[in-house]
Image (spheres, helix red, strand yellow):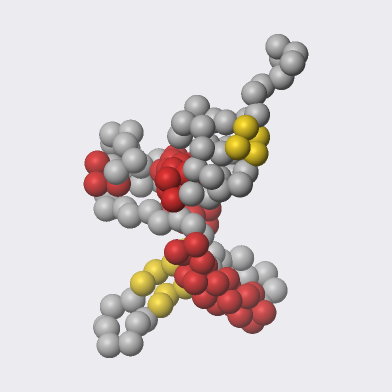
Length: 139
């Protein structure tokens, strides 16, 4: 076998994947769907989205994956992935409804306000880019 070819073998967890094993988790193949690999991948994706949001909002404080250590004027909790898909669907539906009724020349930012049953307070949803363009950073 040539020196430049990497060793290929079955995934360490027995999931049926074949390829070049990764160093961590030891012996697993890229795309492995065992709980350990899936959790590691989900955490990495969530951390990347949180870093991007934090950078865009200019949130000061300790560089940590824990939102409790962030600085700034607001407490922040960031969520990503499939758990936010229902929220995104409702927001996009409301945005489309608003766009259909928007008069020509109206270039105000869109904000959705959700008023859950049994409460007097609402929840504000807005695109991150629109928030930063309209209100600036949270420093």
